[in-house]
Amino acid sequence: MPNEVAHPPRISDLQLRIAQAQTQAKMDLLERANESLTSQLRTIFDGIGRNEQVELIYANGEVVLITKARPRRGEGGE
Image (tube, rainbow, N blue to C red; front, side):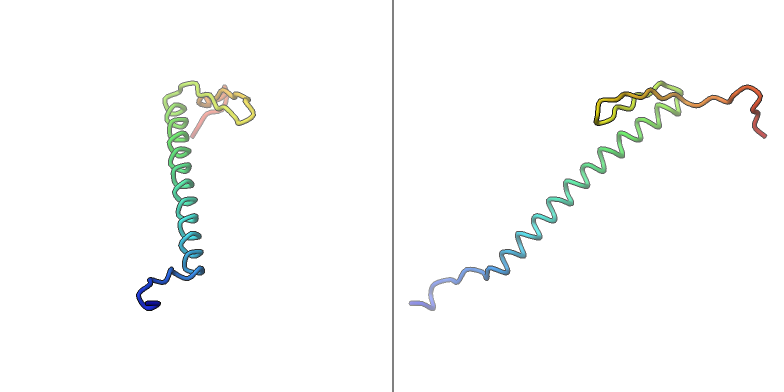
């Protein structure tokens, strides 16, 4: 009878699978955060490129307005 009972996987195998699953979950979360931040930056720079006023809102609630820089008087390009 003892030969008919399926043995559970070793604890170390389970720990490895859990660690791999946790690592994959963290990577998925980081990839989603990266995609979101990339999209936000693209929107900001697109707005600046169209000479629109863009608001940057920091985590502490501070809001900074940004517009496209204009050449100063007397500063000509080449």
